[in-house]
Amino acid sequence: MLMDLKEALLQHYGLSLEDYARITREPSFSNIPLIDSTNEARVAKKRILEAITRGEKVIVYGDYDCDGVMSTSVIVKSIKMLGGKVAGYLPCRYIDGYGINLNNAKRIAESGYNLVICVDNGVSAHEALDYLKERKIDVLIIDHHEILSDLPPCLACIHPDTIHYGEYPVSAGYLSAIFSVYLLDRKDDYLITLGALSTLSDMMPLKGHNREIVRLAIDYINDNQYQQISGFVGKRHIDEKTLSMDLIPAINAIGRMSEDTSINRLIPYFTDDDLTKIERIGVWMKEVNMTRKEMTKQAGENIVINEEDPGILAVSDLPEGLNGLLANKLMEKYKRPTVVFSSCKSDSSLLVGSMRSKDGFSVVKAYETLKNYLVKGGGHEFAGGLSIKKEDLESFKKEFFFLCLKHKFEPIKEDLIPLSYKEITKENFDLVMSFGPFGMEWKEPKFRVNNIPVESLTFTRDGRFLSTQLSGGIRLFSFSLGTSYFSTKNLVDLKVSFARSEYRGVQGMDAYAEEI
Image 1 (spheres, rainbow, N blue to C red):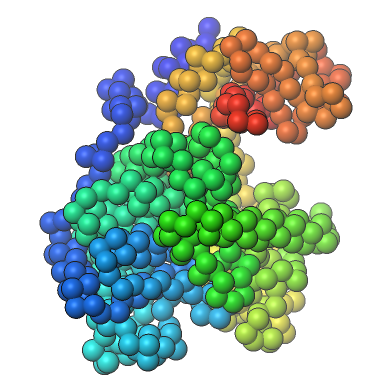
Image 2: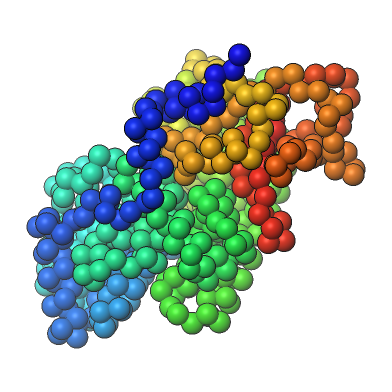
């Protein structure tokens, strides 16, 4: 007999009934720790208010990913709301690279700015911030990246370590949103929403305060239908999956694709109230994102994979910013460590690439072995960026493949919760959704449904997709399984996950089916 589904879900997540009651209560901003009492926040607020009172020029210097865009937008809009003179700058990854650099610090000084606020960067920008200090230009930092040495000169640094914030890691956009509450002396729902977007985009663990800010944002988005979000996605009801699959990739696509400073169009998109301008920029964002998808797909189709190779190493003609997307796609498809390189735009003698892997093959440890070839390299356990000399490609490849042979992926055993075919109901759909939002370190549950009678299944007219309407309005659907998969079976076992859907404005409930 199957365990009661609620009991099984509680066991899956390691929750008690009291824990479940706590995580499913109405979200409240009162559950999010504030930073009002920290010295760093007090110093930052005082300096910003002084700049506004004196009519000083302020610039917010961000980053080219979604977290950097959100952080910049939150602080720019907050200062505008207080009547300050503020500009924002999002660097181009191909021209400026990551973080504030010396050349842009010089431009900032020449342009007469009195206060620089670095967001989602700054804790390692010693050269640029030393230069600004020499010219008596004040700097504030809101960042979450690891502090590897002493901080560069700044009046205040709002960082999880400097303010001893919370139980879980947070994004720079989250910190910016929480700081905005203190700066404005009130909570602005839209700014909190931008902070939540960066929480999802930077894949922060969806626990504690991170979970609460995302739950709040989902309510704010659906209640207020913000043009920048609801208008872009084109759906009435939006959840964390919609944001992570539709909006956030489109924001990141601008930073990956734009080889000029056009990424800065994202600042007015998220800070202006002109709906016509917002709609126009939104169309541009969609066009860039579509180009990104087509380029990545085409590059993947052009790569020849040798099935006997223990890993994948490819050189593509993609812009540097798309290497990681293609590497991840190939790694997931062929289940082996992958590196994708392309020519460096700023130095034709170099190849710039991304490495992707899974359990069993550590990117960090691989870099240690490959360090003699690396011009630059950095990243995390399963993802990293690197540069090598073109002349070293073949030697690098041999060493990389040796590591792939030595450190193969560990088999992943999914924790599938048993569920009967008859239990795919609206009531159980709602129960599963109550455990959301789902994300990093709080994955959506997946179920094993055994002995489904094939004769009970129906398909799309062309037979390509499973599409069976069940009682209560829930649909059993698959993007990968059609009539050919079921043709020789009487009973079938499937992996199933639940998700909300929308078609022509009508909300739906889907149970997505995959082969086990």
